[in-house]
Length: 76
Image 1 (cartoon, rainbow, N blue to C red):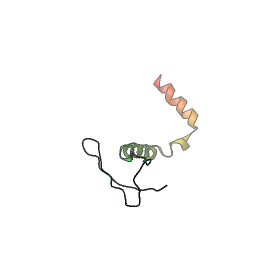
Image 2: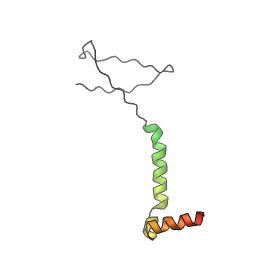
Image 3: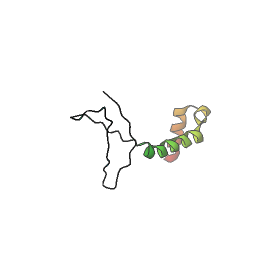
Image 4: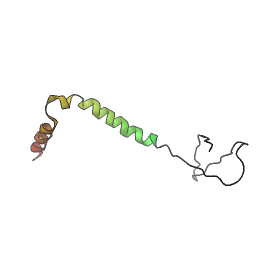
């Protein structure tokens, strides 16, 4: 098995063209496409990091379960 990594840009019609190196012989091959969704998940990760920073140390103030029960009682 040989791994070849390309960066590509999809065209408006969702196509791209690949030219393989000379050492890849013509014939049937299995090709695996991996779509990096990191761009979409970065914001969620950043939001989570902000939440962690804002709430750091909160759990040390008292028993976590007791704190949750207190919050829920406030909602009712």
